Image 1 (cartoon, rainbow, N blue to C red):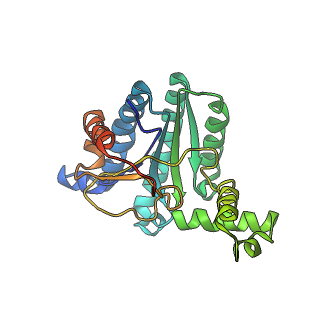
Image 2 (image 1 turned 45 degrees about the vertical axis):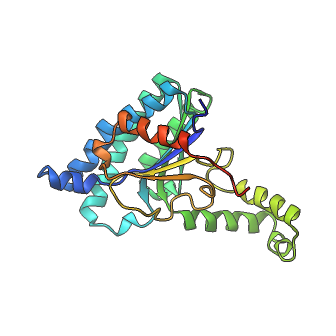
Length: 239
């Protein structure tokens, strides 16, 4: 069975789940962090999918109600520790993409600790997108390229197809996801049918899946159904 190597998920619907259950917005985020993520991650490890990326906080989420943002940061603080310990026990590698240095220093230190402590684990790579935006990632990559090779942007003009492929490989060295295969599947929960800037560069040939299920209700059984649909699709990669 030709399983996807990398599944990327937009974890949407926490606030609507909370409202449906008469709970606070933060209760929805807490439910998602404590009850939904680990079963999905553990299931992917069990069936042999080597990479999963979970979008937890976007560059635009800072514009939410300050109390919600403050509560989310506290959930991250506890969640990184709890899930980091779980990942270490299970042999998973933790990686964080996005400009996560914008978070409080203690959270940055936790992220750095678990990334380093789990770096050699091979069973599954769990990638969290924190303070992540697709355009922001590309802009940061362009800045790094300019610092190391300002002539890169001159080389683009008039480059033939072969040269452009080489330039693409150069850009990918500076993306947050360097060394990680592009996602084969992108899943958005919660019923919205948009990508919101998620992994803009990387999802060129990803298969897209949209489910009405709110993220706190999304479980391994529904994930398996989407993977089965993925296996029925014919991927041509532009050919």
